Image (tube, rainbow, N blue to C red; front, side, top):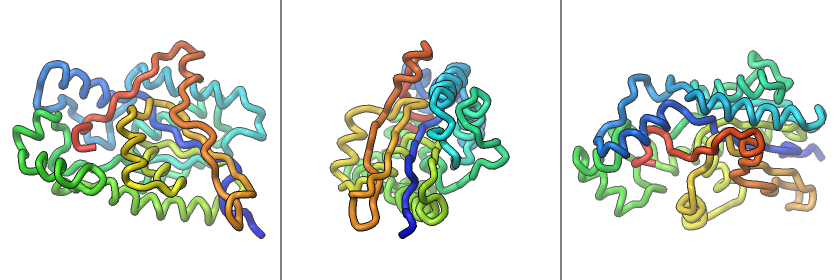
Length: 254
């Protein structure tokens, strides 16, 4: 019987971005808006994010060639794609960037009218949305023009179907965003809303952290993926690249 799931699956959040830095500055100054000019899709890595990506690339490069990723799927957002490219440039990925699978289903959660607003900005400009979110919770609240966590999960179900259909038995790396990491955990581990929100509340997913699953043939009738590590940042610490865990620019709507 053909193996359905990859032998190993790594899910990596992109390196620190200019949006992370701008978001911190806006909150520290008490601003209602986050000062960043690019579309969310075009926000680049910060210099630190580049260092983090290079450090993680060297960690992958230290693995035997037969254990490194041989399939790369990435969000089309610049910060995620550039993270994957720097992993390759640092020797960690034998896959040429031309062969990366750029999958829009792995993109950041869309924030709609709340994009670029701080928590204070949402309360000031869209108090009704702040109240809806309080009542519904972040799992179900969908801002106008944006997505709820459930919407993200819906597209990620489809992405995982693609992984299982085309990449069974392979070593797959996914490069995405904080919500993508959390929602993939929700799906792969068959969690409840309460369980995944408790993990989210415990702390942000660090930039360039690694969440890793390994295939176990004893799980279910056809085998399955078991969590090996979550939010693993040792490669950054060992390389002296500061660990950051700031949410992206529209954190308040996350």
